[in-house]
Image 1 (cartoon, one colour):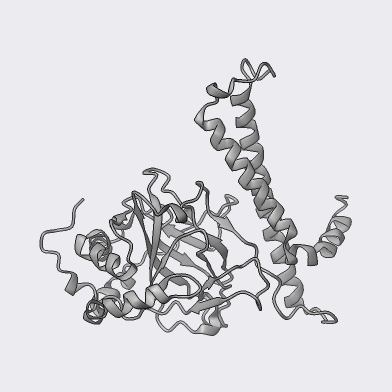
Image 2 (tube, rainbow, N blue to C red; image 1 turned 180 degrees about the vertical axis):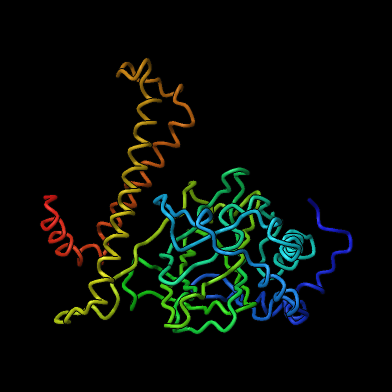
Amino acid sequence: MMPSAEFRIESLVSQHVLDSETSFARAFKEGRPFRHVVMDNFLTAGFCESISSQFPDFRDAHAINENEEIGGKATREKVRTLGDAFEQLDDLVRHPEFLALVEHITGVPHLHYDPYYFGGGTHENCDGQDLDPHIDFNYHPVTSQHRRLNLIIYLNEGWQEDWGGSLQLHQDPYREPDEDEIVTVNPSINRCVIFETSEHSWHGFERIALPDGKKHFSRKSFAVYYYTDTRPPDETAEEHSTIYVERHLPRRFQAGVTLTSEDTGEIKRLLRRRDQHLQRLYRDNQELLSKLNELRYSGGGTRKSMALPEEVPTDLKSAFRMIQVLRHRVAEMEASTSWRITAPVRAIKRLISGKY
């Protein structure tokens, strides 16, 4: 569906953004730890209010997490079904005038809007949710175009920094926090963030910890991702899915510290997440190995002669690459500082559970 002929970008995007695109372009280019820009009062006040009022209710059916459980994050990708304000928003983010604005600010030409909103749309995160530092998948699963930019508009009236939930941009989340360059952005209402997606655009958000009396609040945002048909060779990598880095232990964990109930809860939560992450990695690895064996050997699952090199199908080559990526990710996790520090705790946990 194409935007209406009556579309006027000035009625949806605030005038100060349109007047300041050159300064925003400079800010994007100079952004640290990787290229990004933060723009406040991005949409016109009335349009932002309309979107906020039509933001969809949290529903369990839209909150199934990676472990196939009902979690604290709900997403909606069918944006145009959410109301006329979201229809206008969808018209906006795909319109040639808006694409030209984003291209000028970011310096990335020939952008393509994603009509599938794969991974995008509306995002709502409840108290206790966070998002580990990660880099995004780098190719669109349907079009195979290169993922280049994330554009996020936050919709949180009166959000306080000490509530958590702030976007964090990392230089290298594998480093200890004191060695990592981290830029923090509060998810205030009508704040737009655009950042490049690359092999080093590590980002996530800190755990939401709402105070008593505010537990019914949630972190709301709208996201759309932009793609290009080509990409500079020095920025191009093998295809991969989203790659996460488990968070380090909080800085308060030092030698001699006496653990509080909050501390033990934090340790258990981190261990549980690592266990779930490892289970997914090993499960995916096993599925790939099974597919690999199915492709490698002919005839009813029995181990017969290998296919000749020139007969190796593309699927097999992709499986080999994915297995290498998974093995590399597991090795990185097990070599991380936080993984080593928590080794005694995991050992005690296994001893208590009788799983030695």
